[in-house]
Image (cartoon, rainbow, N blue to C red; front, side, top):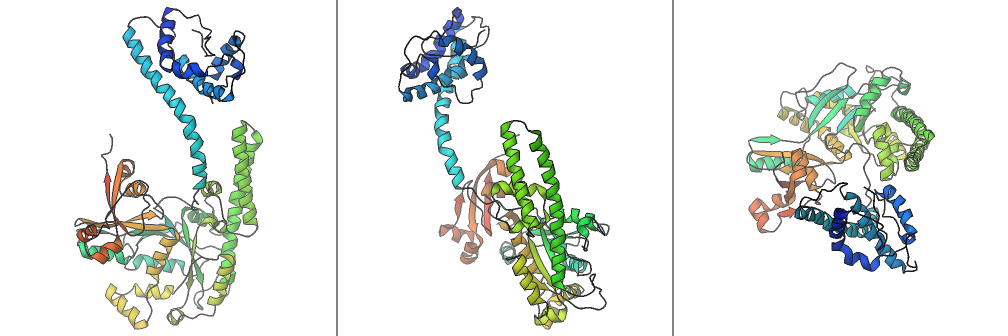
Length: 526
């Protein structure tokens, strides 16, 4: 069967009986729309936008242009309405079956008619909707955070050798927040610990509901092998160290500010500013290596050429990679750049070390920690202000933390803290790391279980429901929300309801840190 194209009233077809019959049925429903705007000349017939049938229809339209009889001067508005109606025809006519044996009038009539009435509607609605959407999207281009999008994020303890990293890690695992089921590896493998995130809100909810099961939020911490000068070139533990640090989402950088003759400093003397320089330079040099490799691979793509659109995209990506490389060679960390969402999409798959957020832990002697004084502190603060403005600094005494873990009970350790006059810094470190990773919490409560769930700040309700169970994200209906503050202030749920503070929220609701949620979701399909 020939492929048809509609060019005005002269359809240039010599169909058999059943083709004519079908065409009459097909054309009838929209003839009123089409007839007013049909222009006989094919020269004004603009092809339907990205028509899948353009190749098959071009041959027949060229042959039919000679048979057009009327003059071509018509208003432009009419020719535009024609293009949409012609697209109805061109998209529809090839749907005709090649050989129609004339069995049942009703059957064909029904089948094609329904297909037909749907098609024009869809074609008229589309152009309008497309015109409206893009500007709206451009207006709400949101900043995307660097790093992995999930909520199951890990942090690693990084530093030069002998600065107190492993001792800190041991203190974290053995303290009351540490999970006894830690996962030891061989020394070169990073050790992993799950640490309970201390939260007064969770404790209060547990006291209120007295649930059978209490599940607090936790944070995964890795102990990463010590770094030395020249690690980026593979000296010492370089490569193992760097693959481990690539696997974490944020870094605790331990800086030694304590003097201890028994613990030899790798560089000979205690000089925290020099140590900070070594680490930041090693990480940056490794990133330069990663980015240069990525650039090499990208250049292979752009050299090959290919479809103009793909090539354009590859060139754009290459420009972005070159921009990142220039930034690093300028001595700057990737996390300190102001990157567009498109650039973030290029940065994230590179797993760059300087793109990871950092919390600086200044390791002091117990004496200095208690009196909150140390000769090196001002210099460290100055360095961080100059190189990593805005990054948190937390003073800690790792030897003190380690000593506190040796007490038989939590109560005894608490008493010691009161006696010495200094609190353990571990809870502060863990809560700060959660903030740095842009993690927040919501709670589910009841007599059976009070649980604190971890989400990324800015997560919407369906994705938060998906943290509880993946099916809930797909089948999410609504969330009943009550803030922790309202519940604490008013005492119980009935009172919260009575005051109108219990809200029903839909798919666009952004969950706030401390929300108590009741998720309503449909049954999972299949």
